[in-house]
Image (tube, rainbow, N blue to C red; front, side):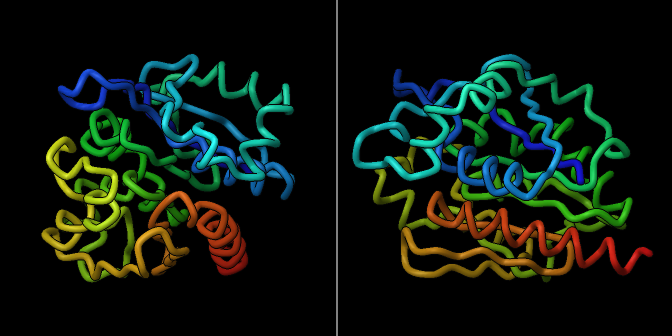
Length: 231
């Protein structure tokens, strides 16, 4: 199996002067779920090279087992430092795509034609597509047969309450929960910071950092299911 993981290249948190990027747990946890399952991984970002890690995601209180493992895994660190350019990626080279979250994607992924076009081509080819946390917002632009792909579909993503808790409600371009509802998705969530991953057909979404491991396992199950059906 071949999976494309997409990360942000954006490191500025709106006009705050603070740094952002991808959320480390949302990369590290799925990365190891996939790698431990024997998946061949390709990492991509809009600019290529080393994507910016959100410094807050690496604070002592946010450490997880997957992050600790990443810091002692030279192969993982090297792979992350050498992401390829998103614009060069083609659906036919992979079985599925997983978009890593964090606040950074709100500025360079969720409205990025390369990202949305790629997700559309994966879905049109009968392949699953997945995103976690803020990156679930990419589905507000992904179209299928003339309509927003997630219209009427069950999805999740970073909640209004979670955004309020990190005091960035008025910094992000829009709220993930509100926007997914606006385009007609059946947005669902659990309590803030709880684990929630949803598969509706070939669309897999996770609510927040804590949901990234479950979202990755769910994606593997969905890929296996549709691969079996295609045979």
